Length: 268
Image 1: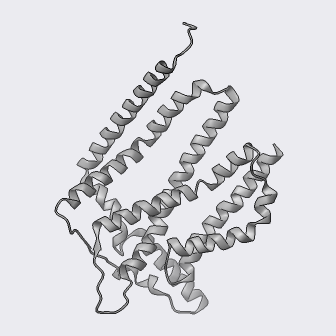
Image 2: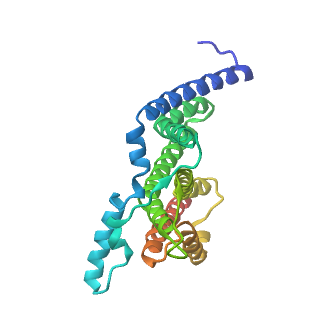
Image 3: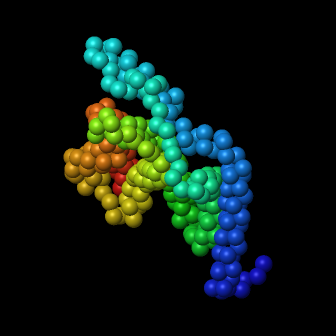
């Protein structure tokens, strides 16, 4: 084995190889996703209809809760009648959106390989204990981001889209939702929730660096709860407290989990 020092150009060449492999795998998965157009958009466009599993599930839960407390159910109980038609207003827009969605799907499918390649590139520069923490950080971040994406798709976006897609200032003013607006909102909310769910991992990292203490987080818990309620009201502008709590409670639990993680990390 050669003991010659690795030069900057050697690192650059290795990085180029990593980027090429990542690009090839991502493009391959993107092409596969592009070819399976109907299954891909069956998943992406599912929340536009009342038959989506989230609407049906929470409709049943709300009907059960309403019968339990003896009050009338809100409009969630009519989820089976919900449907918002999407339109396209530009000649090439559907094809462009098809390519964008296929690329995003390809990137998501290739993301484990992308993370693996990037970690292989940087791991030789880490000490053994640093490599262990890096593995925990990468795996934890990836897992929490996926949970945030799923939470957005199955909870946040359906109720946000249902409210905004059916909201009218007057009966004679009809909503005309474009496909581009639908996809843009879905992607934006998904990214926001994915980042929010990184809270425990980032708290652990900051605690490891000595920049965050659990006492500080506990002291400002009330302020954070108010901020969570405001943020939940912004990203889910529905008219009922049930949906607001549905969004804010998981975010509050994430903060409590972050406090616990920081507390355990500070003890270490």
